[in-house]
Length: 234
Image 1 (tube, rainbow, N blue to C red):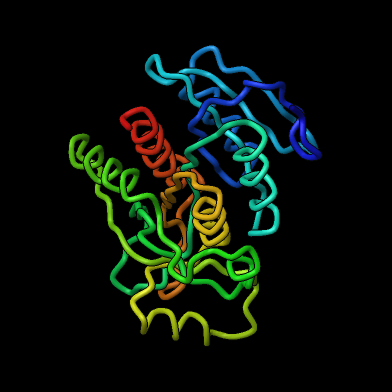
Image 2: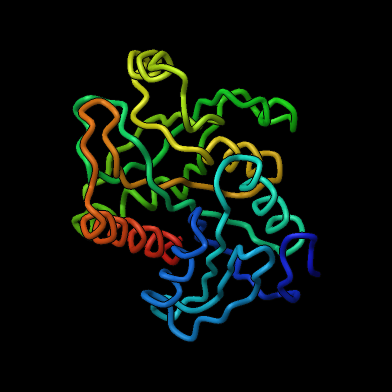
């Protein structure tokens, strides 16, 4: 049934949902990759679609930006719509000096400066579904997509006051920074669902390099297709 933030009908979502942050990217996924895509929710301009990718029904739902926003949609999808798998498909800023722009990363763990995981009773170690991670690695190898794996930092702060966080996390082997994965992994663990984050490196916070708009879209599309193929391969 509809929730305070999702006005989709019962059964409108597939069991597997791809979750970008940006509603426009949700639309892009639906229009670029899905057949017979239908808009199923649009509350507050946060868009969700259901369609088919190579004959398998999948859904796409935007999360908005940051853990508080993402947590709302993740929780409502899992509790009210029978969703069992969420694959976050997003972008990130590079922390690891040797990690190149355009690289796709699967998050094998998340560390965070948020107390959300602790408040909801999530395990101390925030990790993806082993099955989804293994599937993504296998699909990447079969399709020739370069995939790095490692820990990501999920931050509540976009505009850090200084570089202390970057230096600390880089020293600890953290690959990159983004704003939603810790919430996804924490909630999925508590709710008994599967989760995985795939990220495209679009901004290098060590060298200051950034992808152009065209490079960003082409590279993100490669990651989106990997996410969709992972979704239907399980």
